[in-house]
Amino acid sequence: MRENYTAIIPAFNAENTINDLVYSLIKLKKPPLEIIVIDDASTDQTNCLLKNIEEVKLIRLKQNSGPGSARNIGAREAKTKWLLFIDSDCSFPSNSIDNAFPTKEEEKKNIVGIMGVFDIKGENRYSITRYKNMQRHFEIKAMKNPPEVFSSSCFTIKRKAFFECGGFNDNFGKTPTEDNEFYFRLLKKNFSIKYN
Image (tube, rainbow, N blue to C red; front, side, top):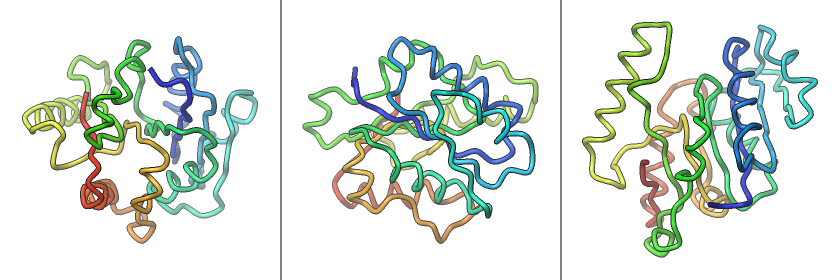
């Protein structure tokens, strides 16, 4: 497992989920060296909930610019070799960190990160969310590995590779296509991200 990673969390109106995610990261057997939350101009209590958590570096944006831009800001602030991007409405089971980074052998094959897969057993009070997570789980598992498409909700990547392909395209704003466009550029650089 990698010793040196930063958790980067883009957050917009995440008051119902952000604390659970942050404390799950803090409680990992190998927690991140840094937790950076980019509050993307939330209008709820997200900012207030995080202000007093010592382990969190909070960056508050004045204008909502979308998750891609927020992730880029967090990556620029990170000081570690590895980045863990995770959305504010995701959870991170305690044993997941052991599988969150490519092996040395995988790195030799230009695999620069690992993408998490939605858990079909996950608890969620919203039926539609449960259904969408289950659907996405099976879609990803049916693909070859590394996959042709990508989900940015939970993944690790080598910081150097992230910047080598230019990070996320800020022009997409809040349109949810920034992750696949980023991955296509990553593939053009002969890098890939596996799912686990």
